[in-house]
Length: 339
Ligand code: KG4
Ligand code: ZN
Image (cartoon, rainbow, N blue to C red; front, side, top):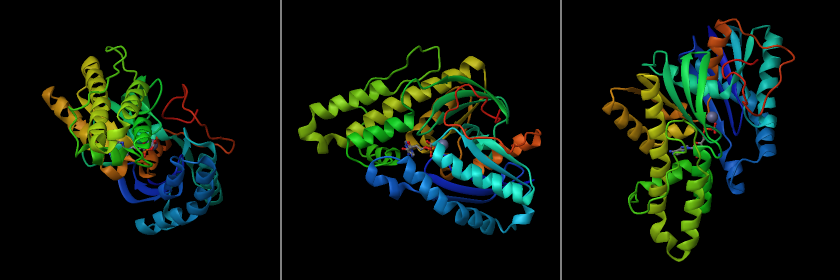
């Protein structure tokens, strides 16, 4: 089945053509980073307006790159939430309209289920069940994933998402937006042992996260050493990154050990972080666990993961309805269908 995926939940306009939920024929991502950078974060209204401009060219590019004509597409999958409402509405209305004109099935997909399914776009995907650490700019959570369409949330952040913490610390250090990649690059030149920021484990037997304490500690350190910041900035980045990574690694490994699950997946934008990738892999190896991490292009937001997740919903008979609406937060909605 050829599924065309569409993703517009935040500031990336993306479309992709994927066969049977795993073989990518094309994946086009049009980033708005340059538009939002001067504002230090995503401006929702600007995001919506730019999705409107980009959606049709991005859709056409995905078909062209895939060498697939529109009439060969069997179904559409589109992000329904969580995300910015104005952004989601652009992709969702567009996909609905295309599916209705072309009289093909379509389905709304959770953005989080998309990230969880991103590992199936790689050549050696995990078997079920597996533990997933989803770390992005909007979410940080651990799931026990039991099928393409079912997962239990074991824990999630009580305040900031891990990526959000990276972005906020980068802002404090005057490094611009988004901050994850910049902090990671700077951390490579720093000594992670120089400044020890607090690790917030909360209850060590549970899987919730909190990153606001680390963020506050970094802010305090910056205020106290404002005169000497240029000499310390790389050590601050390295110390902060290690504090976040230590907590993420501890929680995901503990989740796998507790559930006796042998496989771990690392997904979402922060899964691009080299330190996190190597630390999870090293700790997992010690315990005989296998780690699955998608390629960098599949860690950040993309539409191939939406097509992959949508394929499995379509296969299980789920279809979008003309009255379906988007949603901004996941709350206690099931991750993998649009109920
Ligand atoms: O999944 P994603 O593209 O969008 C959301 O769904 O939020 O994740 C974006 C987040 C941003 O917060 C960005 O700073 C972070 O991922 N990020 C990183 C790295 N690359 C991107 N964080 C840490 N290290 C990186 N190398
Ligand atoms: Zn995302």
